[in-house]
Image 1 (tube, rainbow over the protein chains, first blue to last red):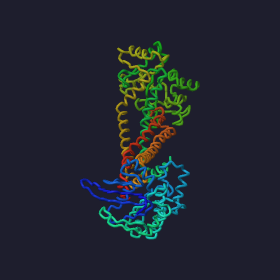
Image 2 (image 1 turned 60 degrees about the vertical axis):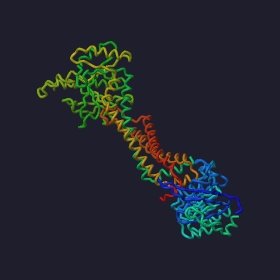
Image 3 (image 1 turned 180 degrees about the horizontal axis):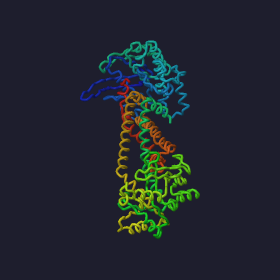
Image 4 (image 1 turned 90 degrees about the vertical axis):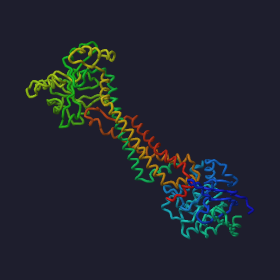
Length: 238
Length: 400
């Protein structure tokens, strides 16, 4: 691909230690994700999809190899630096939404902005913008328990984009949703990729969800085994 | 402040657990305040007597021994002594309640020259002096039992084999930190009653020689000195006077006399402090367990916070503040609640004359509050540290 690389993984190894056992998860993995690309990671359970996602998002560190995101080698950052880096550059979308149940939709979306020096007024503006993008601006005072699954996921997406990160990572974002709602969430992710040029890396088991991405990578036993470039989406990303 | 909403909402997330933690902290602090204030009040009474230049003579062998009242004349004659009175604890029943308040047999002619912090209207004092069965009672005692001048106040002998059928002749008042619950009646009234019993065949005359409860004797003699200087010398002079007598004396300042009672509590005081410390430690475990449970339930939430950029320090701060908020609220309820409770309800009334008043001093209430905050900090520290150091990956993997 001719675009500027947003995420570069070079010769990445990742293994976990459980007691005396060493469990290899990723091996000799090379990957490049272009800026504004919408990448789907597929594969059976235990294939290393989520681990790869975590490495790209700066949640985990490679045992060996380089992980460079937006020009920043994550291996060279301290824990405090990588935490700050995540706050500024990555938005997270989880399968189970992971909203804070005691906070309203507005307060949930506002959480990442509490880490900034923005004024209360500016924070409110940003939150309402994000809520409008996901179509939930009228539900700002609702608690997660008062929202449907799809609405909760929209709030989670608003929380992920409220700081305007350039990378969105989504781990099975439609895994807990019915087909129609899942379609709406995928539409939203597509919109964020197309209209706001967000680079998206999504882990999914759902072929229909993966079909929305510009590229689909298949992992098995920690290695890339297949790559499908979906032309229509590639042109959109470009 | 911008994190307060999050902290506050988390603190009341599980209302039952929060209420139980707040209640246990509050009750412990309430009891701690009572214990600490008891000793503080006792010390205040003792220390407060310094300024009145009084000394107290008792038998060198303790309260069981007697001090012949005939010595009062000799004591008053000593240079530096202004006045002296027998001061005999009676300890009778009133309305079948054993020792509901302090009762002392005293010399009506000079008692208010000696206890000169108290004032009695002159006409009432004259009435008290003129009537052998008269008594002057403190303002608080009168209020407690709804007594007025002219009311009968019959006391049934409990320690003494005689009853005192008294009539209230006056009501004294004085500074609020002094004992306004005493019942002071005439020593000669008690003495004459004892003489009658001592001489009767039914008592066998056994009271005549062996104890301070016999006629002509008092448990203590209260002495007013002309100045505060030389009180130690006066004490020695009095004791030297009776050094080789059948009834040697021990004379000390009123402050030292009060402290002697405190020393009698000796080990009990340490035991009570020990129990207090044990209660705080167990409270710490209870609050710590509540916080640990709360954190365990929020593992994935903490992981999300850390994933979106909350630093370890910030997570530590959020959890610790929540723990301090809960324990601090409980502590404030307990310590300040105890203070206001004791300000409204007169606990001193129920101490049987042991404490003339009871209140929770501000410094003790503030100490209770600070102690609660410490309990919050200590109970939240390890759960907070655990949350701050928890793995984001493991936390996100956990499905609650």
